[in-house]
Length: 102
Image 1: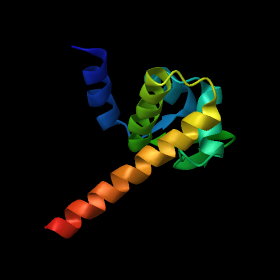
Image 2 (image 1 turned 180 degrees about the horizontal axis):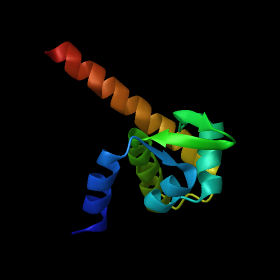
Image 3 (image 1 turned 180 degrees about the vertical axis):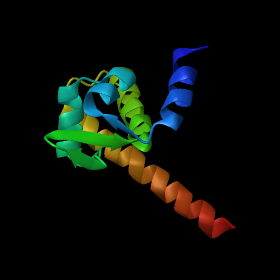
Image 4 (image 1 turned 120 degrees about the vertical axis):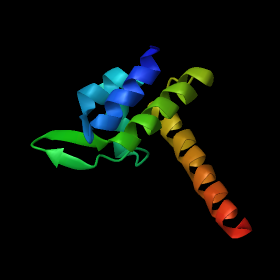
């Protein structure tokens, strides 16, 4: 089974993931994840003690961020956060447009 398929099955069974687990599964460093949270591009679902916990949806967002970072050779995490926010906004607008077309 491909690693992404295994991750999809395993993550479906788990309600939340830690920042360490999110880092391992997404390919982003914990520092990159923290900057994305600080910039508002990624949102922890809750705080357990001093540790962030993320929803299953955050894994997809973090993997998208990693692909964007790699595809556009972005060295600055702040630039990545801006690009990720634009991609998220485009997805929101496309979903809204689909709702209006129904």
